[in-house]
Length: 137
Picture (spheres, helix red, strand yellow):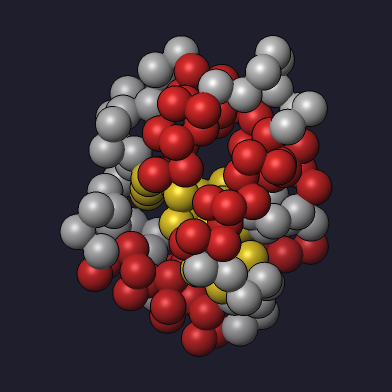
């Protein structure tokens, strides 16, 4: 992932993201394999702000990464984290997502969507992304 991108994680507060995806992103940060401009945007049902998700990061990574968590790396990764609260079936949540991606100058236009959700929701998410014009930015 050397090109800057906005990585949008649907289900960012769930088990898969906490146990596998965030630790993997931490290790990519350790190895300096993420572009400095890459941003990670979580989408989940919790009414969190950016800082709420960042505050959860250290606890999430504890006992899930190889070795001790490096505070410098943790800070770099936390700086990348942003959050949009919303339910997968709520069309207004996708409007907020679109606005965040388009209006925040720090979000690269190159989008990557990671579906850390139950497969039964894939179609709904794809339809909502398309309805908001997020499928071909």
